[in-house]
Image 1 (tube, rainbow, N blue to C red):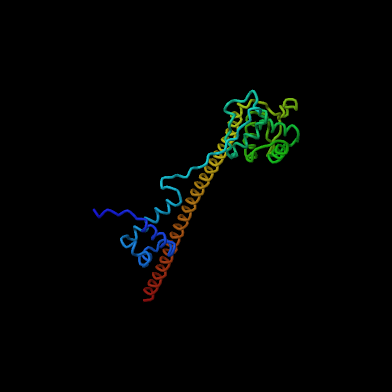
Image 2: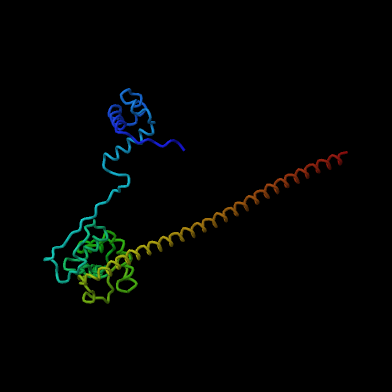
Length: 290
């Protein structure tokens, strides 16, 4: 073990402070070589000066190494006691003033100031639109969406949800599809269709409406997954058919190649035979003349 470090004296601390003021922090060797501070700091190394200056800086700033930065607590919006209604509960006295999220904004638009839910159901909106337009040829998805968006407040993804809602109404036999358009069934009348009135529910039922929105989003996601799976299956079937056709073309090409080779061989054999006959006739004629 080395010799224990000596405690810093006031003269050494003063010399270190003046040296840093003169040369700046980090110039420890230059400070030690200065005749004005060298005598006081001769027994100290560069590391000693560095550590001591760091401790002095921390002490001067008034912040210890163990202090932690504390995040200020969010302000609480306190509701005056006189403005509380008889239905107010103790949990409503202090509401945390946190920034609202898109989900909170969507729910807050559904809940009015008197604690009543005023959101119509999407199926009722669709039936109301088809009843009001009453086109004999039906209406397409864009026309239905424009009609509803002009009269009701809907989420940004409403047009995607509209397709799944139309499919659900088709399965429920409430509407019919003609080509790419939708219309009410012939037996339906205006009196049979329930208008998209605002349903009033208690504040406690907001979770049910939120669950309905979540269910709609899940249905839309399921439909997208199903469509993607069907498209993938069609691509696989097309690729298999193309591979079968390619194999047939390859087999046909091989057959034609073999036929061509056999034809060439047959032609060569015929030429050889003709040559043989010609040579035989020449020999026979020569023997006859002799």
